[in-house]
Amino acid sequence: MSMTTKSLETTAGDVRDRARRPARGRRSSGRKLRRAGWLMVMPAVAHTIVWIAIPVVATFVLSFTDYEVFSAPSFIGLDNYVELWNDDIFRKATWNTVVYTFFTVPFSMAVAVVVAVFLNQKIRFRAAFRATFFLPQVTATVAIAMVWLWMYNPQYGLINAVLSFFGLPSQAWLDDPDLALWSVILVGIWQGIGMKMLIYLAALQNIDPNLYEAASLDGASSVRQFFSITLPMLKPATFFVFVVSIIGAFQVFDQVYVLTDGGPANATTMMTYEVYRAAFQDFRMGLACAQSVVLFAFLLVLTVINRRLTGGDDQ
Image (cartoon, rainbow, N blue to C red; front, top):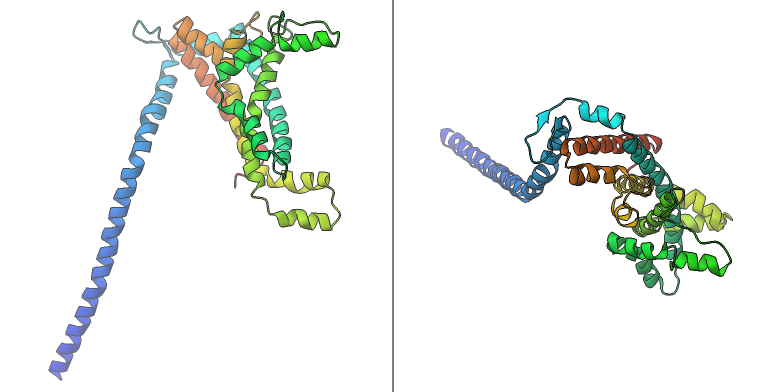
């Protein structure tokens, strides 16, 4: 009896040991996987800390200082923000940025949706059309601005040549304070269509075709299908496009720098252009940092409002 009991105890102990060994092996394997995962993400974490987190914190700190590059920063509290509050030019730049965003974002999104729906159909030369609409997005903004600068030229520009052909008077598109901002807005709308079209096109290809077949059987027209199926199914993509477009619109700089240099009479100056002017023309880095903080606050508030309005649907 004792021999049998000892045998049973030995067998049970062997079973427990064999059960423990795989468990220990799994724990060891899990630790190795976690270490490997951390090693793989460390470059991205280091990049985020060095090139994003530290500059953001430094910008916020320097916004409370008088820093002119060639001398050490000195703490001045809220003086930079008080100066911005009383600065007519920065208020003008803020208003211009809001107007530019208000018109470029919804108009370019509307055109992009229509173009994406059209290019999602089985038509001839579809790939060529897609590449043509997307081309401005991958072309250097300065090059695009130079082309539009020629088109807006009051003496030999293409737009005035077309107006003259129809007997209409020529316009000083970039030299007239009443027309300059709208001319820049037109360039922004045209250039922003490509990327938005591509995102909408990808979203359209994920919509189940059976939805359209069922709607057709119920007698729904193409227009009704667009408003009842396409647009609701594009809601997550629309949220993403809207947020990215607002950020891009508030950061517009190249077109203004090349086309108008902020003029005439500050009619086209933007918040980012004022940041550039304060930092690299006046060498007032503290003031430029304060302007950047204000710009960031605008973007944060607009993003939160948009998320509230869309119900936070980012699935």
